[in-house]
Length: 244
Image (cartoon, rainbow, N blue to C red):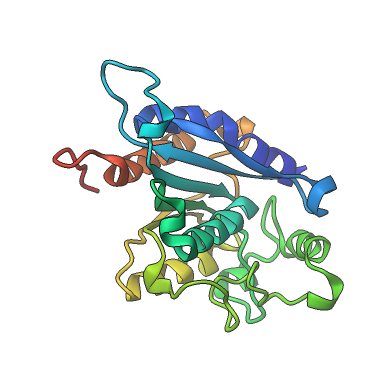
């Protein structure tokens, strides 16, 4: 149930985030169990440019800046799409992926991190549930926690070098057993001069800002505000940049 609710209800926050960052939500890219034999996931695609004060919905052809936002396993997909966008280069002109937001991405790996050991039996998403999810997703002959879809820092990572990745905002929760690997990815991006801040929320669990029953909590609202502030930095018109 967590896979369904956690990602489906990202749509509840999409309009709020778009409002706060003066952006237009182009749509959600969804993959279903029937199509790919994986739990329902959603990546929200923001095709962005600051809204003209005279127009609530300016023509979409004017929106050339794209921010990818993925929640949980959607974070893995957003990162994959970002890699492909970098590889595509000018083929996507005039649209450019200017940033991505990974909200508690569903990363894993063969060598366990401290959080994966300490929080293996944590609330909502524990290790057994996560392992089952990956067994359902990966082909049996390719099952490996260091698969490029699972571990963004795997030795066989596909795609462009880390230094070419777009600015990446990572959101993690204190009691999420996957937190350390997401933080490690952000740290590696920073080492090659990619803007990759981490927002860590205390006393929070996986999906704390996207589950329907938690959307109106102070932490969820603060998270949405924080994401919007950061996104604005990459979609603002020249001369109207926001600091973070």
